[in-house]
Amino acid sequence: MGEIAREVGVNPATLARGYRRYFGCTGGERIRTLRVMHAARELAETAEPLSEIALRAGFYDQSHFTNVFRRTLGVTPSAYRAALQ
Image 1 (tube, rainbow, N blue to C red):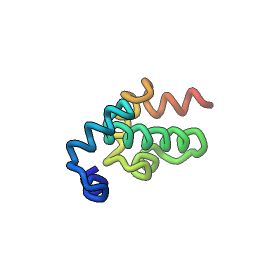
Image 2: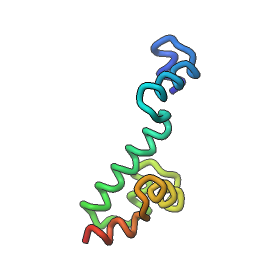
Image 3: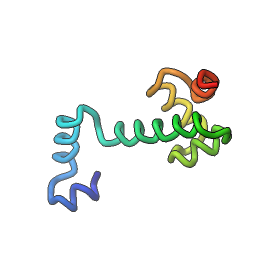
Image 4: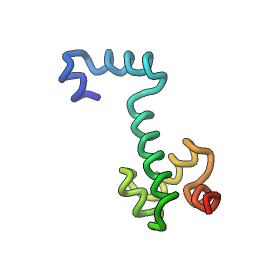
């Protein structure tokens, strides 16, 4: 967000407030949601291990991925994959 703020010539805090007001979430929340949705597609379309999917989706490790996925979609990645099969 800092880089975007510099590009458009506004203070990062101003950009963050405006983003949240317009989109109803923070930039970080939006990025995490996009990462989870990417991972959900991978879970549905591949048999790759969770750790590989987590890293490709930009998560630090599988544990972090599992926690964010569960908070976002209400189920663990394993349960999500099992429900699809």
